[in-house]
Amino acid sequence: MNIEQARFNMIEQQIRPWNVLDQDVLDMLHVVKREQFVPQAYQNLAFADVEIPLPGGEAMFNPKVEARIVQEIAVKKHENVLEIGAGSGYMAALLAHKARHVTTVEILPETKELAEQNLAKAGFTNVTVELGNGAEGWAKGAPYDVIVVSGALPVLPEALVKQVKVGGRLAVILGEAPAMSCNIITRTSETAYDSVKVFETNVKPLTGAVAPSRFTF
Image (cartoon, rainbow, N blue to C red; front, side, top):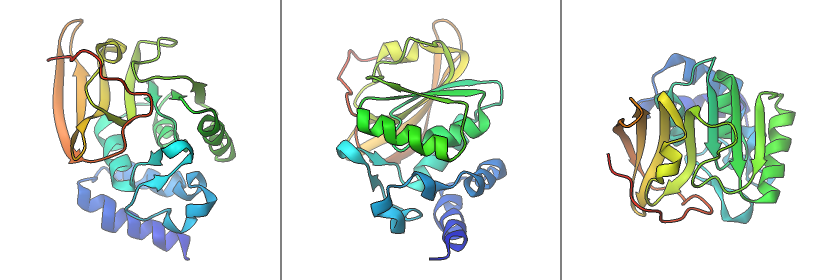
């Protein structure tokens, strides 16, 4: 397989048509090598439009979902980011390419180890991988400029929203199969939030997600 050709095809045929038009994001997909984060057994699917299985029943988002979230959340160089659900470490790598620092929380020990190894091999020094259940946030380091949830939540926990700084953003896929939507939620003041639905999708639920009391805008 010609890896660079496959990467080019992924970007031009899957990602760009999905309204990912930010040139910085498209360029980053050439720099942060997705195949370095895909388990060996699935290398032939590294650039395919599918979710890639990970240990413990988890999965990587398909490439267009990853790219679209990164575009919509628009991380800046001075920002500190929290990711819930480290998975293979790829989303953390994309975020870290733009951020000051990323804390990514993984509930499964073997997956945490996988993410750490992948990030180290790829040369990322501004990511900390923590072991724990971040489904209701991660108090250590809060509040954050940006929070990204890498897995679907049935409802949005209030605790998670409260860990976003005023002016900060949260990217989260809400709902239950087959109807889920990715939302970008901006905290506009101590008490107010602005939510925009950016696309519909259907992804695996976040491991450890609970059905907390509903948060209304």
